[in-house]
Image 1: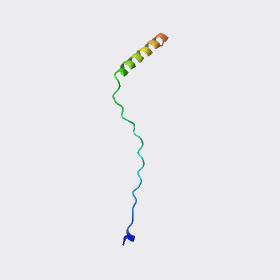
Image 2: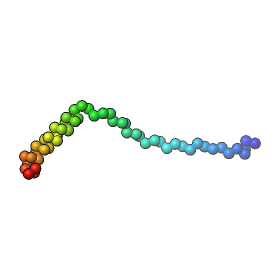
Image 3: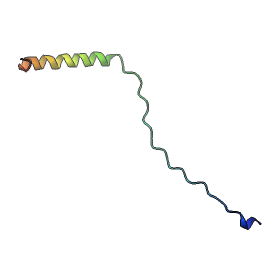
Image 4: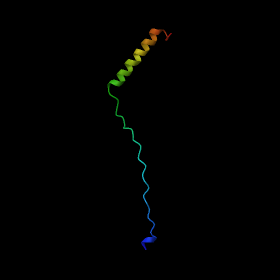
Length: 52
């Protein structure tokens, strides 16, 4: 009787791709550094005479 039983194999799972870790909030110095960099760029463009 056990000869008539069809045995099924579980399909193998594909490995999950590595997930990127969620990034936390920006450090407090990043906005200040961005503003400073923007100010330097504006100053250099002004010194080059490209602002008119």
